[in-house]
Image (cartoon, rainbow, N blue to C red; front, side, top):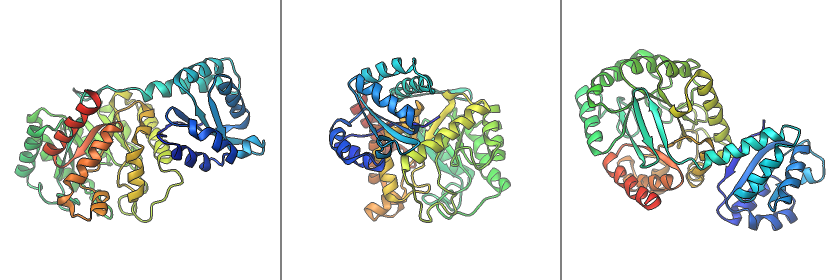
Length: 398
């Protein structure tokens, strides 16, 4: 079944760009692009016969439909489709589709489901014995790297005492979750063995239980996750979106842990070697959808799933900026969105600043991300960013 996306088209230029990408006839672009602002649904690789029925039915209800030039000429077997209409028109369309053949009845149900998910605004995240309420306020995930080589704070918290003190400090400053990692995933980072990673994180996770705060384990190795969850962690933050280790989803399900499904292009050793996309958000959405399916099929309930586009993980500066501008597209999953921009090279490249002078740049990305749908922010500077989040929440939620 073809993919469904709800595009973030806020100006006519965005619509024109998307229609050119689809090879829409120029005359059609001139007619339809002024109308294609907000409420634009994209269906990918739709069989020609279904696409033509969709066009006929939405036009009959006052909407518009863009198809590729090849579809109009009947020279292609499939086409991408842009549906342009109001919620009322979409609802009338889906009612009509229930009476159609060619799997269009199922498509109508999926469009209705996508629109409902897109509007979802609050969640209770089940995280082991903890329940995290996301939506009324932005949740803060504090970063605790137990590594000698992380790009920002490598070596700062290798001693158990320093690590525990930092976790307490972050909790006092407003952290809702502590994310503990024992392997750097910066570009070009060296691999760490399972035993070395466990030896770094396990003493910390065990001692953090006295804080009674949800603990996330930042790992893509199921053996490390299993040990951490057994010791009291309740979330797995997997940079691979449950791909690098096929047992990860099963381990998380067995522990009733929450999972963060992140997008990555390649692996930490090679991901920044000229990353390329035909459609960056389309490819991220497809990757995350597959990860969500892996999680659900393993028995992880949707209320324990969080999604993350993976800022900086196989993306150029322009890719990262495009993601931040259009982050709302990930609302199609109806799941909490996590964003991690803290001190990253995206900010350093734009502002020409070293790691420890990127607080203001991080603050800008945090505010924009929350405005565009992020409900969890992963940060180093907890006190500052919790204030940024609180202020942004007040603006958008009242």
